[in-house]
Length: 370
Image (cartoon, rainbow, N blue to C red; front, side):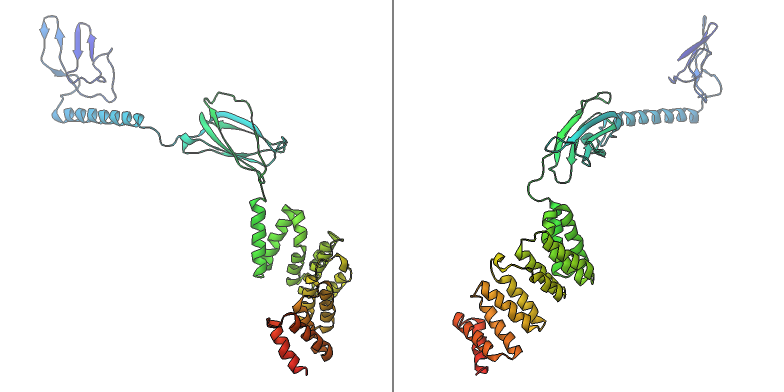
């Protein structure tokens, strides 16, 4: 770097481009002392400093500074040549669209999730409005992966290339197909309810059964007897009776449903309600005597031998080959002191099943009845 004042020219011997040499030269703050050569028309002088003598320490400082600049330049070059691992996904680009169900109607509440692979799969998500529409502004240029989900529908995935943030794409319309078979939420709630019911975790059973009823009211009807049993166990008699009545009212012509409701009432300790349901049963509408047999066993467990005999008899009227009904009716007769009737039933058991468990017990009972 050189400069001129009049006919005197200056330049640096160390090649520093930022030293102030003359009024027309480049500048550096603070100035670095340099050795310059002075030329005139008739020759030149010896080297002399512009400001102060350039000692050894000064020259080492200049060399060190130049070395640092070269290092920073190399590091900057390396940084620029190294690809970025994850880029920011945010920008000014806009995407918009609509999610429809399988009939073409807008689907509210669907979730659209965006992921940019070149930005470490960073992104965001939006929820469709009541018309099934969505929009978002703030995307960088990217081949965006979209996951579209809605309860009760199959997940839809697609890729939308946004080549520029200034590019305005047409709305993205997507149709979702309904899930085949029961939705996982329903299956999980029903299983959780059944598991809790078996272990008498009444609150968990009730919560899950009510959820099933909300998701599928047609299935909820089948759960009314169990809900009645749960409420009875929780000492909520009013709700127990309510669900028993709901069970019967849901299909008055279903005689088996009345039996189920009566059984639930017996398990809940509401004998009067059970008898009220049983009084409305049309025996002709029952396919077999199993329901009456279960009712009779419940009465026998409560030491109500009179009602036990009555419903064992109803069970045998529907199916005369229920061996266990003869045996337990015989036991009920023994409790009533009706030994002759008990003997007839025990003989019937031996006749129908001489080698079975109840047949063996009936033989012993007959020996005692002689």
